[in-house]
Structures are given as C-alpha cells and as structure tokens.
Image (cartoon, helix red, strand yellow):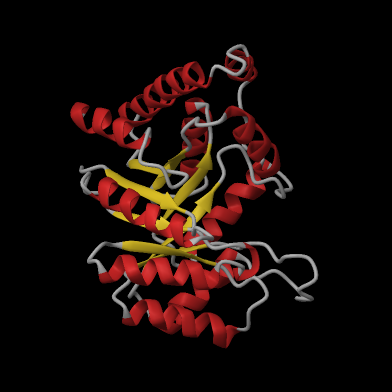
Length: 276
C-alpha cells in the first residue's frame, strides 16, 4: 500500500509571511505530497486568510485541505464557505470542533461529528473528510474510552480518516490504534508529527494543547541550554527515528506540522521515502 504524506500550514498574518509560504509550499511540493492542509483560527478568526491561501493553492493546481469549524458562525456562512471550496475544486476538508473566542456570545460549540454530518448533508460524497484524533486524550475528554467513542462517532458520521495530535511517544500511537480497533474503528488514523524547532516554544504549546513530552526528552533538550544547533540536531534525529518506527509498525502515512518551514520536514520525508 502506498503511504500518504501531507503537510500542514498556518495562515501568515503579513504579506511577507504569505510570500515566504509560497516559496515553502513550492519546495515541499517537489516531494509530491498527497495534499497540504491550512489551519483555521478559533471561531474562524483566520477565515479570510485561510480561504485566500486555500484558493490560491488550489489555483496553482495543488491539492489542499482547508481546516473548518463552526466557531460562532451561522450555518449559512459555513455553507457558503464550503460551496466556495467545492466550486474551486477542493476535494478534502479537515472538520474540527474548534473553539469559540471569548466575547463572541455563541450559545454552544458545534462538535466535529455535527460538522461532518452537515458537510455530508449538503455536499454528499464530494469531499474526503479528515477529523482529529488524540492518542494522549483530548484535554477536555472525560476519559480515554470516552474520547475514542467520540472519534468513532465522527468517523461513523461520514469522515474518511483521522489525523492525530502530535506526540513524541510511538507506543502511545500504537496502543491507541489497538484500542480504536477494539472499539470497531476500521478507518485510517494518520500520525501527526511535529518537528522540534524551538524547545521553549514547543513546551509551552504542548502544555496548552495536552501533548505529552516525555520527561527524559525534556531533560535531554533542556541540557543543551541555548545551543540551538544541538537542540535541532538531536530533535531532528529523534523525530525522524520515531517516524521510521511508526512506518515500520504499520502507520498508513505521516502528516507533518511544518510550522511554515521547509526544514527539517523536507529532509525527514526524503529519508522516509528512501526507505520505502
């Protein structure tokens, strides 16, 4: 079976950032990924930027998957956005619950399962739909088993596959797959991989999103202090080796969180493809 590789971007806030992203996309596209995804801020706070990048990417003949959530939007607004993507030839969406920024006054969250149902109701089978999975449990989950049941509900509602939150423990992914299979989930679950670019930023972000950085890895990286070159070198070696373990263990592919950078994910993927 051919492995699926994909790259994730976030919408830059400046024109210089958008120009840099075009260059990054062009260079990563030489690796022939299945698609690029583009994130969507809480409550659609990056909606216009996300839409602009998605439509420009699609116009360049590149497969792209917009992230999508309801946030505080009305159904008509979300449907209009979906229709714009469909008209542009977009074939894939990443459906998320998302978050509602404080002060928006929305009465409730629209869960990813409901968004999947909404997309299927209005567009049939036009889109391949990705949803999120959490091998180390979603921060808001009541329990490990309940979190898996929510994933199953999203897939049963019509999603085609899932992409995981990033992690740094391959065993967490494999254990999660076993429990998903026991729960009756038979659709692909792609591991999400985050490169280690800046450990201080990564540690802060991980605390906020519930991703676990093993204690030994934290201490190892902290031991390099301000030696960023050593942090990057060790981090790249560790993450690449973890990807190799995942692929050898049967992962259907890899989804890279690029942070809008070419490296180190380009080198990582080249090494993985060399071993296919």
